[in-house]
Image (cartoon, rainbow, N blue to C red; front, side):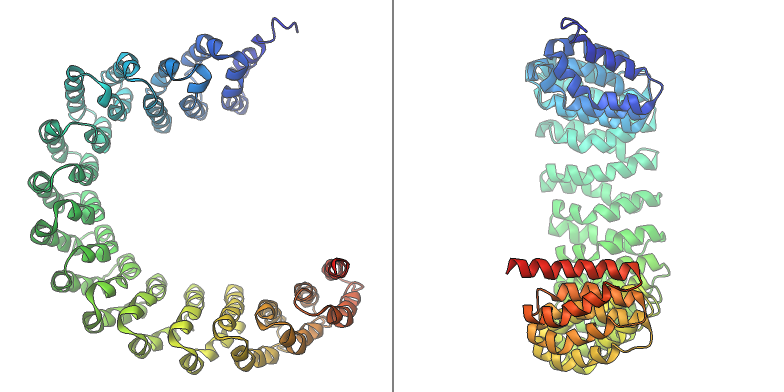
Length: 587
């Protein structure tokens, strides 16, 4: 090919591949657009590549999605911000396609390009694009237009600003619910760019129309707008305009709208201030906590601690606690689970006396719940209660329930208890721990479920770190040595795992005198799985013990294993021997 024709080559390849039947080739071609643009140069990219892409919109959604994404970062390839407007045409076309994810990506790319464009270019190119899309015959164009107003509006002259507000108002009253939904979900972003004077008039009238929409899917998006607008308005305007809407929404006939209110309510409390919260929003929240739809109660229960933090402890005890008591015995396990995940956070809010009197009985009932997730959620947050009521009360009231859960029939609950033990140990202190929980930690090493045995071995290591090697020497090592001769090979394997984890904590002397003999005995086991695990543990002990011990005790043991009939045993033994050799060479 001659040098004169060379620049033509990339575009030819692109065109060929974009017309190929194989979607993968078309996708690869789109993802290489930046490389092709570099080869073509800025001018030819503007004059040939971009027009070609504008025409090439009848394609697979996956290819169009890739194109919408690529064009968003294409400004450097067309000559910088001065020429950003040439990218608008192909993206405008993509804003009208039927597939939602393609349109969303095209809108995202247009916003990215628009935010870099100069004000004059925005007025000349971007605002007309928004107006064209908003007047589009097909609803997809109008849906896309709603997401672009917050970029177009700040740069527009006053006359155009009035027109843009009027167009947005029309989109909020569009015949198609999809367009109204898009207008409702983008209202917060658009409102943030509108001047305060127009915010109170134009935007609030748009908002009121949306809150009275006959489609619940539009109203529930208007709930999100409540929080966004609440932050933009002065507190008194917020109370006048937003508060009545929220109170009405909390009694909406659609459970989806009430669900959204339950999710957003505590943010609105911050916007309206303490007095309106006490007068209007607390009763609304109590209604949501007692809603007849489980999904609404789940959302409300999940926010109970955040809501209580906004209130005074007296208000929380008077209004919210009675609902919490009802929810703790709710017919839906998911409501109880949502409550259990946050209820512990109420203890610091309510203080010691209220926690002991009112919350502890609720904690205990949730700890005994038949549904494992409820019990798990309580266990994982116990430290929040400990900070408030102290360890003595916690151990008297909650410890019996914890011991019961340690033998729970659901292994995930047992696992959660094990993972919580080191934290509990540090809170309870060594004396209390030995009496109540020491035996449990050993019992878990012989659990039927592998994950429990593995977690139990890790637990022993964390306890040794917490209480020190001397304590471990007295309370852990003798029982580990005793279990090393268990008739079941899986339990013997767990002991090897425990040894490998304990050795770094216990130090060289105890490892050589107590732990190494266990591993050497295991290397002579009749089960190959035990033998190759013994080889792996020996390898992990090499850096811990003295070199003389490695040579005198570990090497002969590994040499014997390296001649074992089993291929895996030989493999791991040889790996360990290489480690010894490299340690010796390094020294």
